[in-house]
Length: 240
Image (tube, rainbow, N blue to C red; front, side):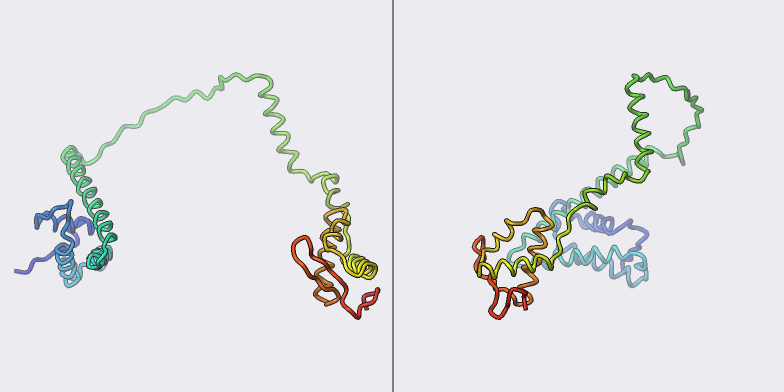
């Protein structure tokens, strides 16, 4: 007679594996993976044949996992297979222990359908009995007032560092650089940077150098701190 398995009899793939191990008296601490794979796949095949696997894809996932462990075990170096096998054994041992404890709890609650604790009325005294120092109350008040002030628009003075910042136009720096080059012929790039008095002027100088190089009006050579620039032949002092 053909043996038939039902998904309802097993709570999951670990439950089925544990059933097969106990049935065939296998050592859970050293599972013969080749033998277990064949038994598990046969059980899953019977489930599929009986149309009992519609909602039990986890059983198929475990079958794939076992086949992978078996495949890796066939390799000359199979440290990964040993690690996967130990991981599976650990899960089975933990699951077996959980089933044992659940069974003990089940025996302890025989005859009881549910446990209900009757409601108890609790009287709550909402009177505030705490004491605070004067400075704590003052600090709390100042904090609350400060939160209110933070909703107001910021004062105009807070925008002065942005609005009053000097903006140096790039085209003015382009003319400045070309004038310097026609006066000296060639000069170090860092000399132009040293002449900058603030960040805006420094950025404008850098952008002017890039613009002149892109327009092929200057030639840049050297590297590091020795980078030099010179005007290309054919450029006059007006940059034409």
